[in-house]
Length: 70
Image (cartoon, rainbow, N blue to C red; front, side, top):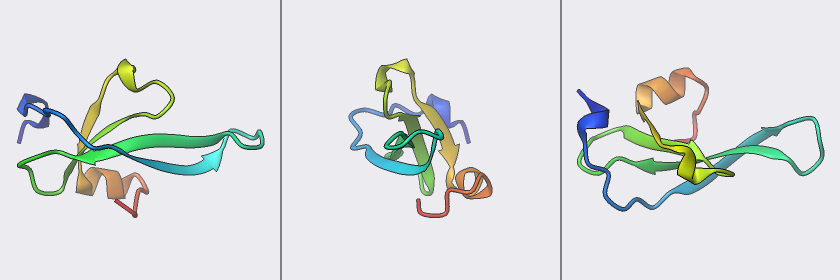
């Protein structure tokens, strides 16, 4: 399936944070939203720079990378 061929339209992203950058109060965060019309697929972007672009992953790919709370 070509996740990049899907039109995302407006998405409701939620923030997921974990770990830090070895400085207090600097959690590493991403924003994640389900891709409409596709089961177990997600759009992911940088929470500090959301205009930088959106990556797309299947749930299996995200879980394999350690994101078990999607």
